[in-house]
Length: 490
Image: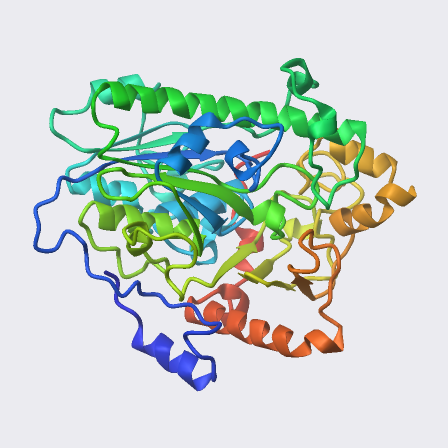
């Protein structure tokens, strides 16, 4: 396993923060479970949706969307109720998953439509070097351009037309590691595709951050329709593996790169932007039918895949394997050090003067979400008026164009939508704090309330400590580079 930094431990000790309370541990504390035993290396299937939020899966209780494949993997494996992305933006989120590092450490890779320097090691390369057959289909590390970073191929591996072609080119006896990167449920959607498939508007549970209207409910059903297509296509891959007799020794992971493409969701570090579904199935090693509440960052997948294959994570990885949680056989809270997670964002689209980002960092526990906005003078969703040189060519460019966005802009002054419009489109203070027990929809910022001062200060100190320990440019210097990295999109 990876080695903890003595300097990091010294800093945390000097800062007065207990490692068991609000500071993250960089080590799992467990030896490789392959030690002293001959185990067959597992295949690895990683299926990642594009813009899918928790809790939009039928096994979680949603009455509209149907996800039989995700449900199966969760029933026959482990469902994680507290899985979070590093960043609610495609490029940095996927880069963090591949490298096992927080996206703020990835230089150009911390931005949407950037590149990722080839000096950052990715888990597919390590597995390939260890004898795995590695590849991906559709959306791998993306969007952006990998060649300027020094890569000869996508960091997710060699690209294949489909899973059948990938399997045909596998040498007999080789374990495989495959990345299925769907483009669902990314926009755009076919209007009323959900309704036409039989979904009922009255059954839709509208997120608290969105106004309840027929337009919004219809838009959510169209999003659900694409979630279902992703789920169906993952099921087709599983059937191929099962027909080959290899499913039980395949570590299957189903998740998403960030939250649903709606206002105050994707590109935001509130729950609907960073909290994603995660189910893991591996019958040969992992007990089925479990629900785990430990906090998991998707950056933890890279060291988890490596440990499952009998390899050591690299010393640069800030993430840690959760193989110990998978093998525990338990439900609920298992690893007591997994009681929080970090998230953040840098530049998403070009929607502010000087290509400025709207940098945010957050620490999330079971009870609270604390957010630090480094540039509260800017518009978090992008400038209200489009200017020449901005991309995309619309106001509030960090919010994907959609019927819901248009509805909220057109009804911004009406009582039903006014507060939600301000929360989703307006400016924000330097600090935000949400009491998730009394306000699960994260609508009421209590950062300035006296009764929350102690918890806010503890969370702020813990966040600062971790950002310093992981060399975040926002706290150690050099953050202006995020505004100047090339943007290879638009």
